[in-house]
Image 1: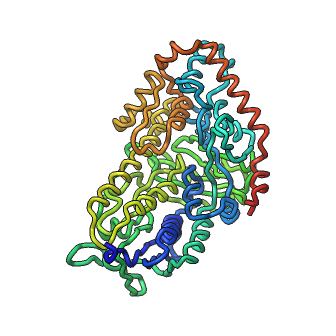
Image 2 (image 1 turned 135 degrees about the vertical axis):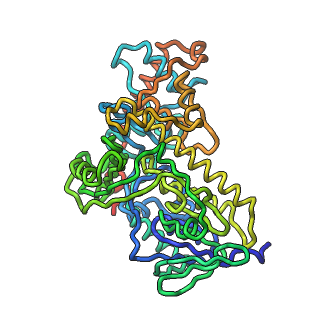
Length: 505
């Protein structure tokens, strides 16, 4: 077995995907395997993936990267969730928190108590669902502190992720990887040559004529998919009939308005949605849109008119096709990042999918001998995760029924995958949150979107009738909201916490 161990891994492409892969491989395989990354300074990176979800913390911790060092080097900030503005109707807003809505005090989910109390309370008498989230309690006041370990405290019921400059993160990880033996080659890969006998990739050839051989290749070449598609013609599954946006325009600006908020904001626009991601040194902004409903110039003008402060650059445009490769691992190539597929950054999953791809690669690490079992399982798990995230994104579009614009009307009327339709029906019937294998987003995430976008259940959990009356439920959620508000106001400001832990750039 050992004599079949990989002797060389070649990563084609840098950016966030390439250097996350290089850093993780260098950490996990400290000896016996040469790791080489090829990238070209002439080829830019997409560089809009600046918001993340909580698993990114595990990636950094596994590599031994201290939180303060990471934030200082990436000019990062903390993220408690996403505020959605104009989703579910022009005047709606809600928060998708990292963490739960309170903690159950009996067998009944907290939101069932909230729904029961809502049905019997006068308008405005009951706190909104968001008020039961510790993440939103802190976020709305611009406060942040690390969660506490004591499970009795509401301050243990939230999680967090980060906002950061993706270009600075790639540079940070490059230093980490090179210090652990990764070799970087400057150059542009033009072609890949396959073994005439087995069909695997044998070498990649650079524009200057150099050829580089490898036992295994990781395709981090972005949308081009130089190896996974260009050389192996793996195929692509197009999901734009469910997720109609196919372009984005990005434009950073001076931080202004309500400043460095500890959350991302997503604002629905006529033909898509706008992101706002506050960093220490600037605010990232972009408009993800459907080119069938708005021109590039109109999209850029809409974005420019809705910035917090003066723009810090010209608009940068990006074209994409939402979907995935038919296989993420084909022969001796794994595609990670945009080479494997793309889903718009509505729920900040781009960097997580890089991380997940790397974790699976390490879990099913190949040898020089083909391993069909490992390849099939890698692809099965990767496809399932992509499809579960796809369904969660589609949910936002499907439930945005009260928007008057043509794109949103079409999205609300579309048929959705059966896996999603079943979840919507379960919640609409009795407020039940059905979880499936490989669901990245848990019950609290689905709950936030269902309630936030007006998909209220027609009835409640039957068990509720045997355990509490609406008055008791109302008293419970009112006490919970008050405890969260009190705890939030005791926290330091977001900026003060960054300074306190030594993370200010």
